[in-house]
View 1 (tube, rainbow over the protein chains, first blue to last red):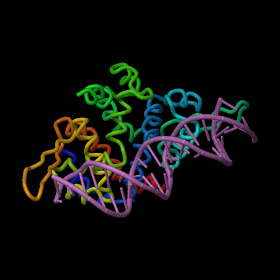
View 2 (spheres, chains in turn yellow, blue, green, red):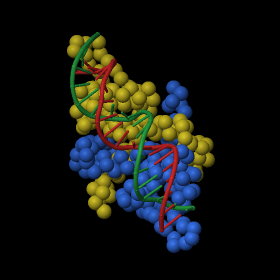
View 3 (cartoon, rainbow over the protein chains, first blue to last red):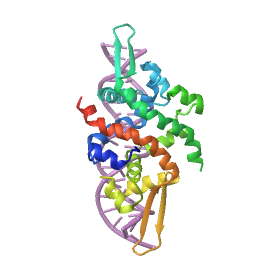
Length: 120
Length: 120
DNA sequence: CGGGATCCACCCGGATACTG
DNA sequence: CAGTATCCGGGTGGATCCCG
């Protein structure tokens, strides 16, 4: 059965009203940097510095802020090792992988059509 | 075969660098109001006033601006009728429906898990 | 009814400097 | 290396008025 807005509402209630939990989560994961950080982590664990280089153009402040939000929502797991110099690794949680399973087809489609969309 | 970031890059090139077309399109469709407007139109054509009521909390300025962007990208079709009082209808294009086909599963999952995500 | 134009407040997010 | 603290400019987006 095809998913529709009506069906989503029938199953989950009125989930897109102002200030509702759904909108909050959408703001976190569909934010400018949220998408790109999640995407960068889909192919495996990355260290802070690798993540910073992978997500082209992100500032340290926004990387920190984005990671804290995604960790607080349970999409990303942070593991820090008691070493000198310090080492911190970030990875998707099971919940994060569930999310990206649904997000990747969308990213794939956008990546394949972006040029045509902006050109025409 | 499972979609991955590596596979997306292998097929479409380096599509998530700063300022690339993919990021621009993502900014349009994943923006705070872009998602909600597209979502509102998935169940059929809506008039300006209906759209404004459907997308809870949106201002007239942002609705107009969002619709112009989505129309310019070819996701939304605008049809105006030469009547008094004026009537304008908005609907998804084929490209818009292709997009939402990939976006709806994500929305469905978020709607179903948002409360747990913010609660835990 | 369906917008456009203008003004302005707020806050997101960048730059820089500093620390464990 | 992996962040935090502070400052501050610009753009997003709301409010208001107006028009066809």
